[in-house]
Image: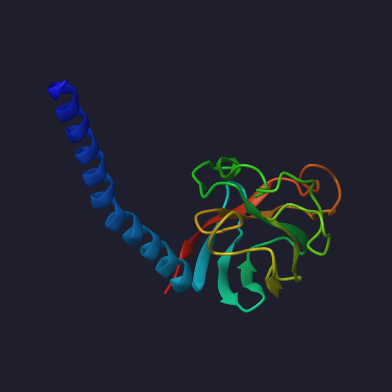
Length: 187
């Protein structure tokens, strides 16, 4: 009987000690997470061309009151519209850009245009290149964030060879991938 009592007491004290000793670590983790969430205010994406293309440029993402402001400056495109999407993985290692996976779609919904209520989170529409192959675009995306389920940090931006028709499933029939870049945290 004494053995059972001592075993029970030892077990109780061990569990209590482990619970109490892990509490400060849990609190530190929650505080660190909150601080990181509040500190990420800007991200960058350097676009490099995929094999056979010349697309390159810079995209700046900035936290604003109503979402994420996107400012893109891309060169080396053929004149016209080009699908502009955030893709699932931050991996541009494949020469064709396919290592970036499909469109970023955390809600598992159909492809659409940037103004559609139901669309992939990564569906940003088209970027339009002038006769010299230069494209500039600036808009605010209310559905994107730097944190949580719709976080764009560590994902890729793909500039497609052709126009996104904004309705063909699952990707808008925008053609091959002309440029790829990974979104990273900036100062």
